[in-house]
Length: 418
Image 1 (cartoon, rainbow, N blue to C red):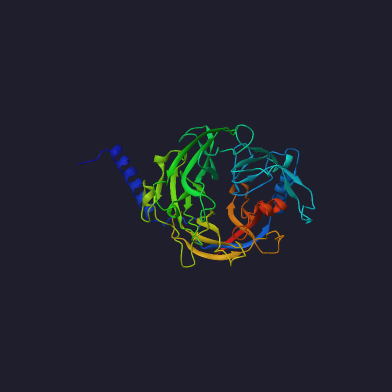
Image 2 (tube, rainbow, N blue to C red):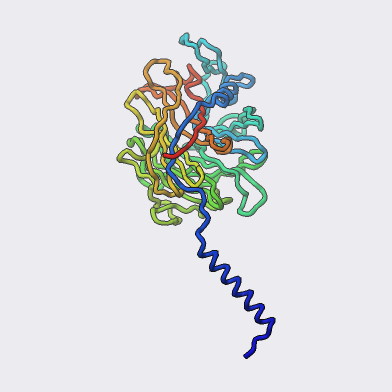
């Protein structure tokens, strides 16, 4: 049978398309950026940012704003401002040296003979030029921005700007919170209870709501409770949220991982947890992505970033000998959010203030990356400073006597082949 000419032309075109598709499938895929081992290859102190926090903290124009704090996190806002997020925060007046002990340090005092004010959290707003301009505290103008509970408090950790709902053009800030209850030794930093998510409006930064997303109160042993948000990474349509269990009897913690569709951080039912094989909806079945023990494990606070195709985790290394506090930062790397994670590798010891007591108890802790303030190839990393007194000796006298003992410091890192 003779095929009409028009049908022959159409058939030939279809065959050509099929042949082209087969050829494309046969060609090797275009290589993307390779996932390779990473570690810190060089670093330098970022004195400009460290000094900006010194300037702002020492400014007595107001005596009810930030003078020091820890738990340093940040999020870049759509209008170019940066929101800095702190856990425990000191306010009150800063006095020039010498301090009451005659030492050459700025020191903190309270008006009218009060104890210097310490609140469980605060926010500090940085303008587009990089100048810190105001502190946000509670609705009444004082106290924590994220309200205390009748039987506990909240420590904020990671934050992201995301759509109010998936696909929405309206953006909000979501802040992950750790809900903790008072505890006795060894739980001197509180007993972990739950991870919550706060929603802040933009551009006003008004607190709209706080929603529980991962309740751990049913886990009988507090040492096995996992709080999420010490690190998080937005990657495509997912936000990956890392957490840890920070039992005080262990030198290191296990690291865990959840993921949430972008725009749904505040919806508990949208969270999925890595169980070692797959993502599933039950937080109790989560398995560690880095397991503590045998020279491995993470600190109670760590940070994760993407470097090309490689995921990089930075954590405080295993604490040193008693009396030497925390001092060194180490790295792990992986080709996926869930691992397998390789390391630890590399070790750097960032600068710390001198211990005014001469006891070598100044600690560095809570390394946190700030990708929104990091130009290509120069990762901004903060770390917190504190004075760890021997058992039974409060640290407040030291951190009030030298305000540099409770303020963040900053580094610029370069990551390279590890």
